[in-house]
Length: 208
Image (cartoon, rainbow, N blue to C red):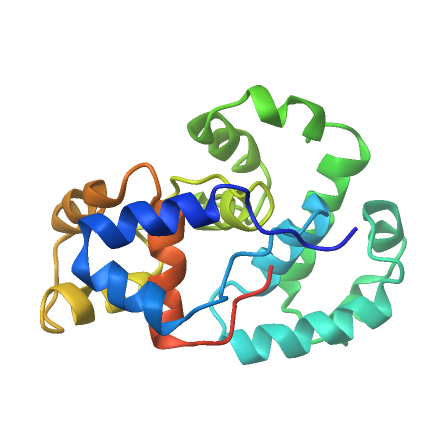
């Protein structure tokens, strides 16, 4: 199944552009750039773990190598691989452990996609955070890049914070509460605002 854009994208862009001059400029600057939700939940979470605390370019390289080691990329297949083989893809020992714990949660049903439509963002973040190596940021990436939830604001994302400070505060630091207060202006489309702020720093769409 190919990644698909959220049905709400055009409506969200129109609403943000009407209410926020900075958003209007960013949306006009990057026409045709839309979030493409990954239809595979295990892949999305695994890629988010791989990308923790490394650059986007480095994460892409490690992911390409890992995808060759674990083929097809599925929980049961990953669990069959030796730690040493997973390390050859460029993973740290800690990330190997995280990916294995994630695979076990999928394999034994502790993570069950059938319930996600009925769960709130907060409930999903709590469920996913039970996996070693998944904190709030990683869970929020999942809400954006797999479920395409429309109103996610990952306030701990350094790139997002940098973009907000650049466009809304002359590059000066903003306190967390100020970031949250500013983002309220984008509700219920904070995911879309986040996407265009990311694009302002790196036009190449992020993949998870």
